[in-house]
Length: 291
Image 1: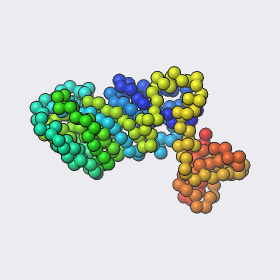
Image 2: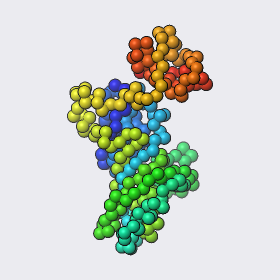
Image 3: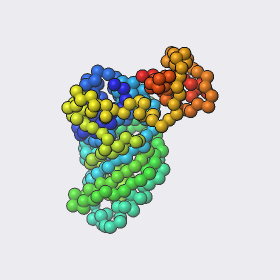
Image 4: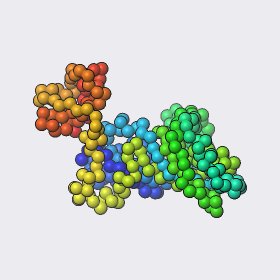
């Protein structure tokens, strides 16, 4: 079993918890392509077996989230986990027609973002949250992000809640976005809930929960239907058929002379059995993944 499962992660569990459970189910190497906070839910691509070698093709995917933020309260971690640092009155004019939408629209585009202190980004070999927990300050480098779309889903004036959908580049911290929106609205705020609904081409509609996977472990048809094979993942890219001698050399890591090959190719034997993935290395075909 080699490929990708699109898991819908529940609340109050870490991405590592999901990896551990699935590794225990299948007894194979398992990994993921980017963590979700324990309180966050949604799309978590899980790589299984030889599928773990796909990680390099997945790290730069754009993402889409639905986030709910609470206005009037600022927390240490910019989410509901941290201690309250500040409380500020929320002017009800914030919720007047068109006001929130105007602020959200102003956030669209390329911009610099400073990640939150309570994050797993490493500075000088140490995670930021480790500095934060020890009370040490550190210079956090800015990173360039891009927000492609940001739209209002709903607002609750009584509870001071705003829910929005955001489509953004890799590395965007939604907690920081929530704080910035609150600031532009003239108050403070934190991220209350976060649901990741898309990672690249992987959507929440095609995901399954860990519980659903556990319930269907003996159902091979179900597993086959939900697993994205390595061949399926690269569907649409050029294919190369190798004869027996070339295939033997390819599998053993020998680079093959090939003219006009694509950057990535699907490799098949003479009977059109899928063998793996080859890459263009200075005009030569090089083994990348062999199943």
